[in-house]
Length: 235
Image (cartoon, rainbow, N blue to C red; front, side, top):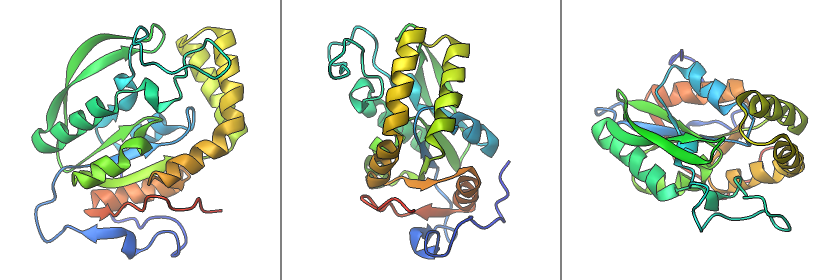
């Protein structure tokens, strides 16, 4: 669970009051923390540690027979790591409805079959929830413009660690065939720093797990972040 009295981790140059706007003088509206990061970076585990309701953005993937699905260049593989494989409009609509009403209807997506198998009601209690997924950074600006954003984070770590964690998870869950998982894993490991840089440019703050928990605590205490799209990646 979050300690809302804890101050965010990090140097004053990276985390300071200029990134937040106080909303303590009025009832705190329901807002979302968008949690991005490369596949296998530990987003789901971190989101669970916060004790907040978690909206799984992976459930908004397109289905396998959608003609708009992108392909990996030079391959017949569907590029599930391209934002074109994901329904951003539906995800933003669900987040907006949760912030407005505290409930929405969400798809249940099976990654192994690349299909939506069901739908279910999703309920939250104000004032804060998490929406996590590899495309969370792609909707930072839209959520900010709608007044829904509390913070946007990009979880980062060592590419080799991310590779191992992702492969173990995907094999355990039988997400795709072994050859596909190996091809994808190798490609993502080589691209990981570019992925983090892209998500940072879209407005997500790059950080490790402990610093992320500090920023979750700040958001839970009612300090919402002003997005800085195009910020450089801290060294």
